Amino acid sequence: MTKQLTYGAAALAALSIMAGSVQAQETVIWWDFLSGGDGVRMKQLIDDFNAAHEGEITIDATTLEWGVPFYSKVQTSVAVGEAPDIMTYHASRIPLAVDQGVLQPLTAEDFEAMGVSEADYAPATWDAVTVDGQQYALPFDTHPIVLYYNKDILEANGLLTEDGLPVGLDSREAFTDTLMQLKEAGVQFPLASVTADGNFMFRTIYSLMAQQDGELMTDGEFLAGDNAEKLTNALSVLQEWTNEGLQSTYTDYPATVALFTSGEAAMMINGVWEVPTMTDLQEQGNLFEWGAVELPVIFDHAATYADSHAFAIPANQGSEMTPEKRAAVLEVMGWMAQNSLFWATAGHIPAYGPVTESADYQSMEPNATYSSLTENMIFDPKTPLAGVAGPIFDVMATYFVPTLNGEMDPAEAVDEIVYELNDM
Image (cartoon, rainbow, N blue to C red; front, side):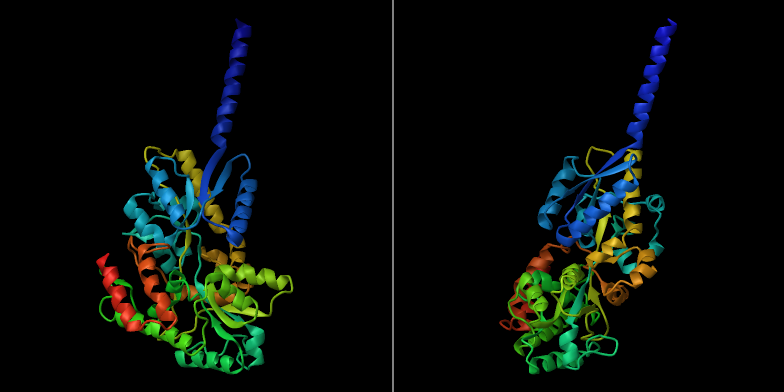
């Protein structure tokens, strides 16, 4: 009897140890859409997190195809309760996600558990993940467009300031003059732009609208009041540069990057995510001296379009997350935010203020130079029709390409855009 009790006690003790181990080790299922340099860096962050939380939390990560395929899979997976525990999400897509019911809201207690607060974020970035006063994600970064420039070409033509910045960033006239001087000096393409892809050019055009305090949507109406005129102004500037031979025409994304990195284009408008491309080429000895800076002020004041990669928790139908699992997910979110300095090497601006305010970040170039644009950021309008790969992009892109390449009158294009957007 005593022996049986002893064996029974030992078995119970073993079960208790096993149960404790199961509770201590949480596996967090993760989905992202990050490829290229972004993907490499995120995989490193995930490895670092797993190493720091060995025996406690493990991230089991899967990378899916960017854009519509990713968001379609999220929607269908949530409906059957098979979505991940955490996923990356574009801030611009959150209004649609809320409309679809695919995201769990985050509470004040959640942010406290993450060790972050609203005060740690730029107001525009925090607002971008907020719908009707409720937060649905934790911003991880902001990834705006910037102006890349070839310092060697600009310096050779007397178009570099003492601070190492391009001359003419403060007005339409001054920047156009800089482009003209480069053309007259024999530079084949003063400016490289993705003029064959209207979805991409939305970023530049929306920035120029915002420099006039323009709004894409006002009280549920697209391009109300004088906003159509402001869009026309933005398109007119870009068409003028094309007609004058100052900007590349019908150029797709890879060709735009190639024009700049080959030295055929003196400047380029592109996303901060191309910083690793430039950094790697220069380290290999295959690139000139270069820099990146906030877009020039073409109209009234500085403004730049941006989006944010954020972390969100799917609202899995019929599959409630345990308190232990949620605690693990929140630990992942908070750790990623607080360790996002490495993410900045992808060119992105970390959303967590204490990181961008750190001495390490302030010494990181060109990131520190263009990070001032966070004070002038504008995000997509809050509508389920907006966001990455959303219907607004598709409608506008149809008219942007022929207009930017000099084949359609800007005012005529805007009339068609206004009709089609409001018809949606």
